[in-house]
Image 1: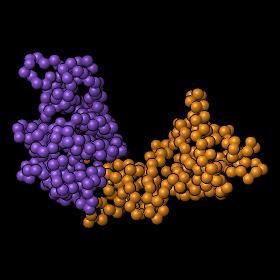
Image 2 (image 1 turned 60 degrees about the horizontal axis):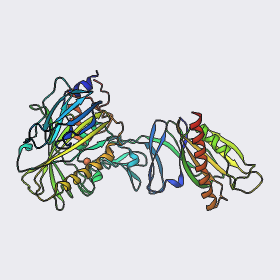
Image 3 (image 1 turned 135 degrees about the vertical axis):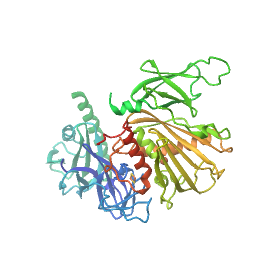
Image 4 (image 1 turned 180 degrees about the vertical axis):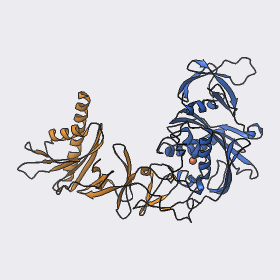
Length: 227
Length: 290
Ligand code: FES
Ligand SMILES: [Fe+2]
């Protein structure tokens, strides 16, 4: 497995927990009160509860089932059923490598994390799940460029391939540039994480978001037809 | 046939409440992966208040018996006897079959959760538990060899609203019994009659290894609440449990030590898993290594 985007930074706010999937890896991604992001196997070592149902208390994630607290390093440091007990060091959440870069949270579940550097990606647009393989999603967003924001001469360029990142650059104008990082969930599910250059207005973000819906619909339709 | 299924086939499981179906009414269900139909018979004589039932598995009629306000079925050819609950024959108690809740989880995980008190402050917040009263004090667990049941005693826990009839928080005492792999009985302090114990049981119908229908049943001292209120209270509790049970990974219960990490508060669960493993009750469990 490789480095994959799992969320826009903006969409995981302080003290929030979310679930993300990469192939067979089910994970809990959370942000502490001070802003530290962690991605863990979605299984509490105690009794297997999905940690994505847990809640953040300060710099700890507490499991929803019996409230065991894990710090940002994944170590369990508090067991409410035994408040006096110092939990053994061996009780640890299984943590993955994560990085936050270019407004995106990147995770590698099996090795070092290598985020894709997208220097001018500054405005978060949205993340959108699409029921198709990653190549179809890539193809969909390359072909169906947005008419009001991207000129007809828009260049679609794949600027990275593990994971895939697509740049849509308008030629010869100061229109908005768009970046899409593709999360390979499994062979039939992709999530497109979309950002834009800093000249994107609120209206542009709304328009790009609608465009993403259209691309999803068209892409899912043609993926369904070709099956 | 695999050994886990063969073992599970010899036990009795609830498939309907007594009186749930009107005479002639039929429902379809599943037990241990087998499709079953449950038919309420037309009364043989006018003195019978509720109809008896006929259950067919793959078309053939199977053994049925009535106990604890439910109809129980055994699909095996060497049935073990159904466990007893003495309080079921005490005439001054209220008997409350609470209906059924379907849960996408292993039947063994459903029972284990019922035996667990440490989750009360987090899952049943403000009802069966509340922070900061999270500590689980030392209690006793053993297998009663004379009846081959797991028994946990001397459990004490602070509860904000221990039962429908409770007014304010009380220190509740619990005793747990596991008389069969897919049933558990709990005896707890009765808020209205502090010298007596309320009985709450969980009867689990395994549809397959990862899906079950759970039939809670109570035998209480409570002459103030209506039947509907009592059922609603218990259903609310169980729906909170369901949100946990459907999110435990792996779906099947691990019986070998080392896959999950217990603490002292989990001694009942540890004893339950050992007891299951010893008797070969692996239906709904992860593969076991000798
Ligand atoms: S399963 Fe997480 S604290 Fe018990
Ligand atoms: Fe519970």
